[in-house]
Length: 345
Image (cartoon, rainbow, N blue to C red; front, side, top):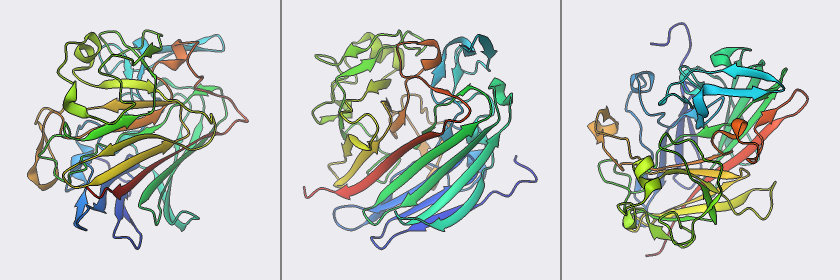
C-alpha cells in the first residue's frame, strides 16, 4: 500500500462526449470513454474499478513507465566511462524502470487550461541513484484532452548529471469497449519499413530488419490476428507481437501520424501521432486471466494491445540506435497523441 501520500483521480472532458480519467499514482490513464459509430460511449482502455487494483502487482496498466521504458540488457549500461547497475526484473534484464519505476510512485498534480483543452500536469523528482540511475531528474507528464477527441501527452525532463531517459505510456487499448473480447479483429497500420528483431529474451540484436514478406508488415491495414499464429522465430520469442518498429518519419522532429487501429464492429478508430522514432506494439500476449479488471472481467491473452511510442529498447548498449542520453542543460521533450474518431462502416 502507498501510505502518507495523497492519491487522486482527475477527469478531463470535452464537448464531444469524450472523457479521460487519470490518477497521479503512476501517472496512469485509468479510463478513456469515447463514442462508437452509433454514439454509444464506451471505455476503451483496460484497468481496474478501484485504485487498490493499481497498487497491487499488474502489467503496467495505463502507467507512465521509466526512467527507461522497455528493456536494458543485463541491467547494465556505461555512460561517459562509468558503468551503472540496475535491477534485473525481467529474465536477467532491466524492464520499465526496475522494481519501483515511475509506474509505482505518486506524482504531484496541477490542473490547468491549455491550448489543447483541459489539462493535467503531473510532476515527479527522481533522485540521484533511484533504481540505480544517475542524476536528479525532474520530469513532467502533461495530459490534455482536445475537442478532436485527442488525448495529448507531453513529456518534459531535465537532469543535473548525465543520465539516460526513455519514457512511454503503457495503456492497453480494446476499442470494442469490452475487455472480455480479444483485439485480434482490430485492424492495424504501422508506418514502418523496419523493426528491431530480438533474441529469445526480447533484447534487440542490433539489426534493423525489413518487414517485407514477414508477419511484421503492417504498412497496409491488417487484422492483428491475421498472421499472429504463423511459424516465425520472432513471434515465438515474443509469444506474439512484442517488438519495436522503426518509424518512417520524414520529419524527424515534428508530430507525425505513425499508426492507426480500427475496430470494425464499433467503428472506433485510433490514430497515433508522435515525435518519437520507435513504436512498441504489444498484443497482450502475457495476459493470462489472473488480472481481474473492470466489471469483474479477467483479462486474458489478447484482451488489449499497447502502442508505446518510445526510443528503441536497449539503446544505451546499442551505439547505432538513436541516443537516449540526457545531459545537464538539455531538455528531454516528446509528444504523443492518441486521437479517437469513428469510421462510417
